[in-house]
Each structure stands twice: as structure tokens, then as C-alpha cells.
Image (cartoon, rainbow, N blue to C red; front, side):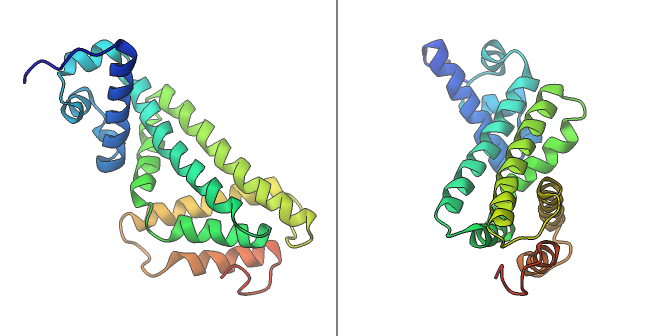
Amino acid sequence: MSRAPRRPPAERRTELATAARDLALSDGLAAVTLRGVAGRAGVTPALVAHYHPAMDALVASAFAAVVGAELAEVRTLLAGADGPTQRLAVLLRTLLDGTRDDVTLVWVEAWALGRRNEALAEAVREQMDAWQELILGIMQEGVEAGEFHADDPAQAAWQLLGMIDGLNAQALVRWGGGDRGPVLARAVEGMLGLRRGALD
């Protein structure tokens, strides 16, 4: 491999972090290795190790970059919805339509790899808290507006997040078949006292 052109350290570090993020999104988090990132960036593994000596931290930052971008995108989508019921419907539709399976794979691998990578585990906990906060905001808005009925909105938010994660993880191995959105929508309508079809 020819020598990579010289770049300022901050620029090189960012370039390698971007390569790690792109690799995680295309091939999964397990692909974020010294050799994998080097190959993606067109540099030597030694150069990656020089700028990112702690691979666990680079894996964690790749995870956070992928799922953080998804969360920002979903927040933007929800901002355009009219009221909590519509926001919840948009949330379910966009997270269960099968177009985000690449991000789901990153999540699933992060839960497994985080058992032995504390930097990754911390990043996973932070991102799960951020998702729970987003969903809790919708739940609280719906309860305050009289549209949702939930004695414990925080618990309802955790429950919904777990249901979304479980269904999406199952879809990675094509288990269950069919459209997951309507199935979950019926369950959530029952959970929140909404009329049937309110989340269609």
C-alpha cells in the first residue's frame, strides 16, 4: 500500500472516525477493526492505531455516530407531525418499515459487544436513554393532552422501546414475516387507551 498523504492530525483523526462509522453502517459494528478501518480509509493499520490507540473507544464512537444520526433524523420527522398521536404513528412507521435494518444491526451488535467493551456499553446506555427520553416526551405530551392514558408514562416509554427493538431484531433474521408496524400499532393503541386504528 502506498503511503497515505500527510494531513493535519485533527483532520486525519476525523477521517478515520468517519471511515469507522461508514464501516459500521455498511458491514456492522464487528467489522470495525484496525484492519477494517485501515482498508476503508486506504491507510495502514499502524496509522489507525497511531490516531486511535484504543479500538474500544473507536468502536464506541462509530456506534454513537450511526445511532445519533438516526435519532436526529427521527426528531426532525417527528417535529413535522401534528400532535402526540400523529407523532407516535410517525415514530412507529419510520422505525418499523424495514428501511433502517442497517442501523438495527449496529444496535444488536452493540448490545452483544458491549458486554466486553465498557466504552461501547456506556455509549449504548447513553443512546438508549436518549431514545427513551424522546419517546417519554411523546407519552407525556399525549397524557397531558388527554389523548393517551398511562399511569406511568416513563414505564410505557421503556416498554414501547423494548417492543420496537425486539421486533426489529427479529426482522434481521426474517422471523415473523409481514408488516411489523400494524401489529405493534394495535398493541400500543391498547396500552394507551387509543381507539383502534388511531396509529394507522
